Image (cartoon, rainbow, N blue to C red; front, side, top):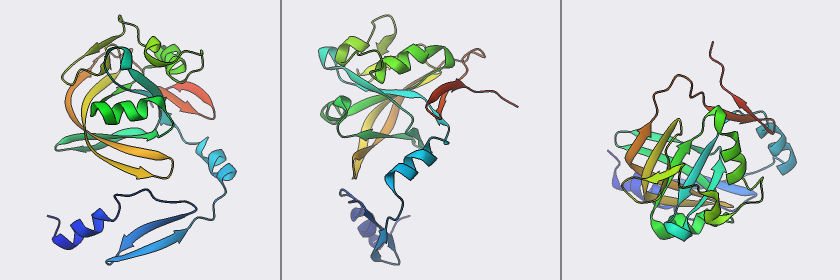
Length: 199
């Protein structure tokens, strides 16, 4: 159980963290950590990281917005919670905050066109990206991809601004899991989409 001191330490994180100096808390002290990694070198290293490709979506009707992400993961299972890191310049960002809900939709290898559409690679934007045959809704009313590997309908539990992004923490209120052996997860690395291969 967190004590009053640890809760106080956690409160210090509830603000935007400036770069090039980030901060961490240890032994009750707020300590600066200089950032000596150059942006170009960091981006180059990140290209080697393999990420699961997902669409985070929110909004209702003509206000629906979504984007392709690799920065979305599970947070805990009791209670079920996930997080997604959303750039504050993304048009879906403010819609998530306004709606108080979002869906996290994990794509399969046969859904590359969807990933490209929600990454604006085909020039589409806004609600036009959502096809009524592909998207439905569950508890919160935000768009949920029906034929994903799995989709999670989430209420925003908390947010944390860090540099250019907001970490959206979502409490999962409903989910879809398509138990299909042919639904192989879509991945992204070195600027290319790929598919999982199991040993």
